Length: 579
Image 1 (cartoon, rainbow, N blue to C red):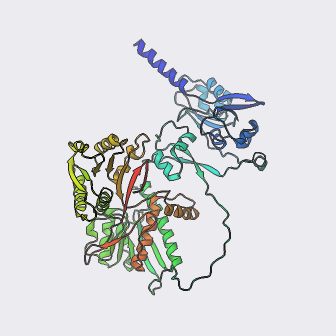
Image 2: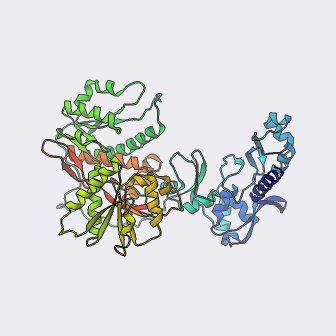
Image 3: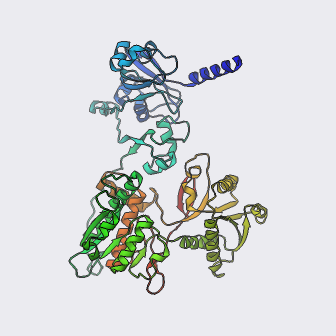
């Protein structure tokens, strides 16, 4: 028992000693942190790390305006601030006061309960403290209260020739977010986020606050060019709508603006983002000549429900309805539109029976069958004379996907490709590894354990190609774990990437309008609204949007239209790109 106690004591000592904090010294009559420059450090990063104005760092360290050298020692003037401290084991009031260079009276003034002694995990508010800057751990028991870092003065700018055009924002990690998804959202590399937040791994937790450098857009002076004369023979890119005063359009969204008991902030946020994109589309259509009265119906509000909305006589006068985003509610509105002979659009995938017998309906998201067709055609085109191995599963959903893929694969004519396919199982698929130097596996399973095993086994083998499912991206082991550098190809209804030229152009427009970052839901709202209004009301066909492709196909005489276009993407290096 004594040996166990000594071992635990030793481990605790090692843990405490392992926590490294920036040393504090006195220089030119001022207390300073002592920082040893490491790879990747720059003046901007030091300013953010120590919450110290760049002007003071430069004044304390003449010459560093020319750049930092790895191993160089830099003195950072201490900026006293308010911190929150969590009391550790055996910590006393005296020890805490010395730790932050404040008096015990100051601590008890803001924390009256501390007069009776400190308790483990007690939270203390300590104003005017010298904050400890941890240099080797992702977390600390001290929380520095948010303070704005002053910008360099004009005198400093002229003296040191420095310019800061970037900003740092604080982001609270949401559930389902990973450091990778955050890096893509804010277009900041993962290593840069790790360095700025002193993260030793890629793990982040919901509710955790991390700092993110947001770079301002580069603005250059555009030279003035002569405007060429207008060519009369060119057809202007404008829409000519039927001779009507206006169209009546209904938009159903689960905004939940009055916070009902069923409020889901993620659903509500997604609905709001969708509306922001749709509004931009209506603004664009208005400039093109479309006059539309848009009626937004919050069908999850406390003051009204779906039944009361559909009972409103004005709804039967609509020219077009955008159906709810959820399947059950969309089916109810679909029945209403069918009964009243109103055109209806489904922004997300719906069951095929909603299109049957209703020529005024259109589904904007390709079906699973459509995606399997795209994937099968892609395999044929990539491997025209090779043999492909399909790893079949036994679950009901996976069996359906396998059959859809097989049907599509066999329907590709031999004039396009002479590729062959072998149907294997999870028990025997490895026996085909020796068939060719390059092996192509198609796995349409949603069995996480088996799929992760497959991806892990071949992640470093350049001779193995894997075709899979977009649902794999929802697993944190695939998209949120840096060690798992998996590569596979999949079919998707849309392609959202901040590196896409169309997304970048729309992102600037979105930011100018809302001062917010663009999301996939906002792009979906824009694409769906613009496409449907042009095709159903103006009869002008468009084939692509910001993140969507469109190729409408009528599901037989008297039925509605299904979008059959999508994307085949390769997931590699934690990013999806068109194949």
